[in-house]
Amino acid sequence: MTPKIMEVYGLVPFTNTNLGPGMVMIRPRGSTPHFHRLGNYNADKIPAAEQMAGLGASDISGAERPAEMTQEAYEMGRTFSEGL
Image (cartoon, rainbow, N blue to C red; front, side, top):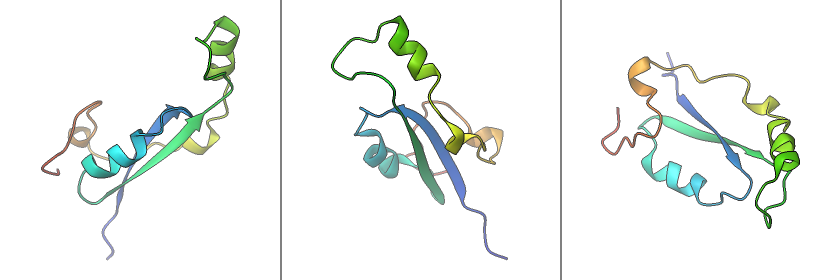
């Protein structure tokens, strides 16, 4: 039987270009990082109410399937430098 690979998902603004390489370095052993870039706002301006509404209305259809993992592996903001 082939072992199941854990998938780690993130919803990030399209302007966050350093998250991908950083997640590759700190991801849990045996996992693959996946990202959905959110758009619909002007990166040169501080988001106003209408821009935030557009961001909230962004299509996130690529991220509707949550990763299957244990509760121990699901800790927001935690770095797994030693793996799981």
